[in-house]
Image (cartoon, each protein chain N blue to C red):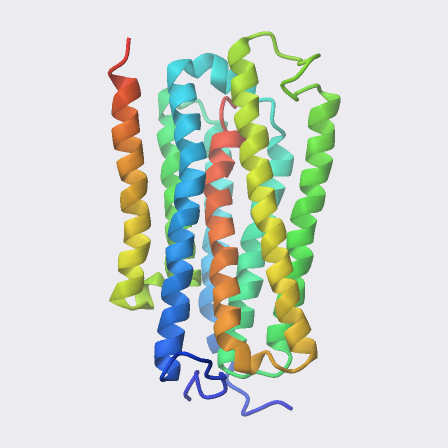
Length: 210
Length: 96
């Protein structure tokens, strides 16, 4: 079965395979740039952890491993649901693509809700590196700054991903999902990268110093 | 308006196996974090994270099935990340 048969051909591409290749290539170029964006944060983390390992790790260990682990499981499951949705769309199996996207949206929102509870607890424990910061060691401020910035930037990416998924759900409601298969694939790739980034963030922010 | 029903297993199987593997790896890395293995904790955690990332890249993002151009692009991202770590890292490593 030709997966591209139902996809609409847009300007300026001369053929559907070419359009598909262009979309996927462009997406991966963007994803590579995202890797570098987060890579900068990862590199900063690496340097500061390397400079004063015990103090840095000691400070980072104040994160809540339960929230972090739950969010990892939630995000990985959302990758499952969006992957199944994409495959079902290519196989043209009825309502599964839309249902898969709804599940992904719900799990993504759950991720943000858990993060909200987590941030609230962090603020109650005075882990915000401002006045009244709970930890004495100045390295603690740096360590937790990385925690806040990395998780916040990631959460922004999750939010953008949810907006993209919302756009796909609007298409699904209008029954234009099939002809926008390339859009679905693009959103799916973006969402998986958000998961990959979190998967690497998780041990750095939640499993240190246990 | 459902078209010819493709066998559901074909849609589900591979992603489900990948997901199960990811959850198993999550349990592994969480458990390993609490084991008394000292300095091995960070390498183990990063190794498991690397395997999980690879799983997602290959099984969910289909990098193994992608065109050479796409794989080159993904590789380029990693390559430039390596440049940053090596070059900027060399700066910090040779200080003091």
